[in-house]
Length: 471
Image 1 (cartoon, rainbow, N blue to C red):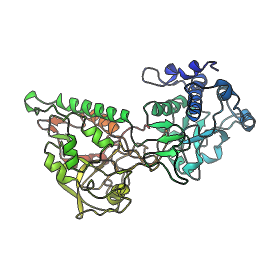
Image 2 (cartoon, rainbow, N blue to C red; image 1 turned 90 degrees about the horizontal axis):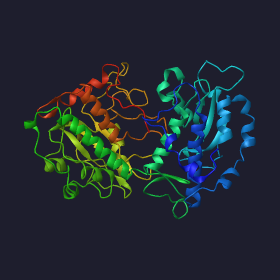
Image 3 (cartoon, rainbow, N blue to C red; image 1 turned 60 degrees about the vertical axis):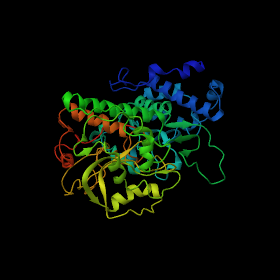
Image 4 (cartoon, one colour; image 1 turned 180 degrees about the vertical axis):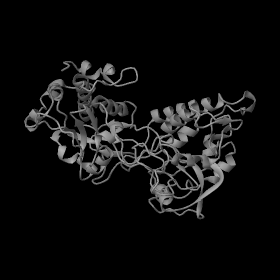
């Protein structure tokens, strides 16, 4: 165990990255995992006590659960026991989604016939889901046979991770999960600190908070990262166009005054993004989706920004529209956009424009992703439910006859959370791959093909139009 505060906090060489990948030889890197775990314990202690360095004596004295986990020690593989020997016992509220160290067997919940030898439990819950997340809690499950972990928050999420051999992409080295948690802290997405004073029973209106930890609807890093992803994508498109076909534009996509005219709220993710990202120098940013060079048309197409919405909510903004392609309002579309309007959504007319919308968000809702998106299509995906079609990040197919689920996460998130929208930066990273791999082609006006090209998502293996699982 590291013996100084500096050693506890200096974990750069332990974080998983492309240059420093997780161990892939089928064993537990228990020393690396212990360092990452202890960093999170120390960070939580500092946040709780408003200190800049951890008190190692206080952390060491908190090992109260040793008796609780002693009974399972003989059911654990040696590396997992070595991990327990090296870690500090976290106080309650270890991280946003998990309460603390659990170390409870869970073979009875996992549908897998390949059992461990020597009477050892194959599946063990290392960290238990925070009870505030609801009933049927599970947690971070460790597979002692394959030395990988997954994070089904509830029993209902188990269908996304079992049988294991059919869901291998949802299982990761433990250091990968811990690194993702630390990454979310470092970019400012998840924040540690005791709640601000509020009247009894009230909740913060600008974040989702569980005890010590808060999930922010967006952070400054996400704005910058999404700007960079969009500009990389634009560069990939522009590099495939002739110089003479590029539009002579260098300004940001929108000014503040133009967004005011469209009713886009102040101090939100989508306003920050659209006033910083460079205007693409072409007409079509995706098949059938136009770059809003005509600002008056952009204003006219908005259906949600001028409808009354809650103070802590951000309505959906139509960023890139499919001109003259409308879709009738149905329950799926109404429920998606109504979240920002306290479900009192009174839309003028019976249809809305299709295209790429920013995520409608109520900031105090659990796990909300203001930096997300939805593509609203003028046709159904999987119109014949008995046929396979487009897949989401969690490996499941989009819902039958869906208009809005293309490129979404799905219900399961491998590093924590349930059901939040996919991030816009991930969409543009995926679109960049689609351009570079030739799935989409580029012509004189930008990306070729009408919006009906998105029907391809229901063909092939269903993964070309999906985003790999991430946080």
